[in-house]
Image (cartoon, rainbow, N blue to C red; front, top):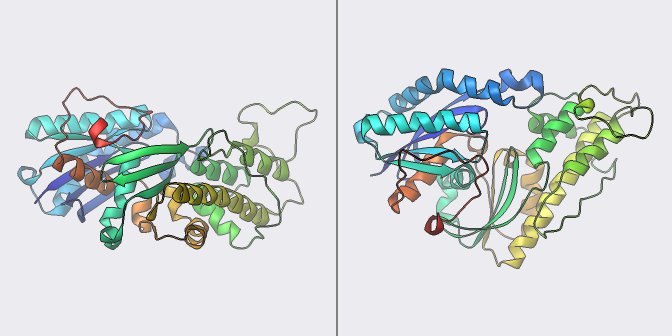
Length: 352
């Protein structure tokens, strides 16, 4: 039996979990910072890192207690090493190092994006997943397409060139005064809107499997808000306080924006699946909770589409522990000199 203690602090969630054999969650504790960042309409990095410092010890302690295990029974500590906010990552990694040193436990650094993929191995569908698979990871600042040929074996096919899907949701929700986080707010507003009321262009990218949503955000801004006098561009941040046009239809804008974003994600995912002969599509990350994205991908893929339950879509430590189990059992061990990697790309185990 392999028991992995997972720790996740890549952004604005302080999380710890204990997972058995990479499949069974014994405990999963998440301390959310949504209320702290809501006034800013997005994550404030310094606020996030300070909040991690305040609660991480209690969160880890609670996870171990709820799992009903002792530190002597833990096989290894798996911690998110990157990508993410440098300050937030440092809190988790340094805590994990101290714990590993004090308890003489192996340490395994995990890529946050790989963790999202392995959230699917914590579900009943795990035994159905066939390789090769195309993984669409839409989480926070990441919109990535990855070819997964086996456990720990990845080829990065494409990613966001500017705003990621999650960032676009947050920014458009702020423009439309819908609140934070943007994903659930946009989805709720879109339920009462016409997705064809506004025609938004889909961005062209140099790479066939890359994404770009900055232009879509700007298009929504131009439709929704009163533009400044003159022809010059707005200064950075001006869109936060721009007044909405009196005639703007917020629900229609939300629905049309959501459709444009979902169409772009689905079109390139399906194209990648066809190009590489995929046997399955894996949809993971915070934006995978979006109902329209799930339904459209299932309709268009022509393949089995797997996605985690809502509790495992957003950042959590159970997924880090699951990924950590696979890497630990295949021999990965990291030293106490391991550093954080804020811009770390997903890499295969054999080339890591």
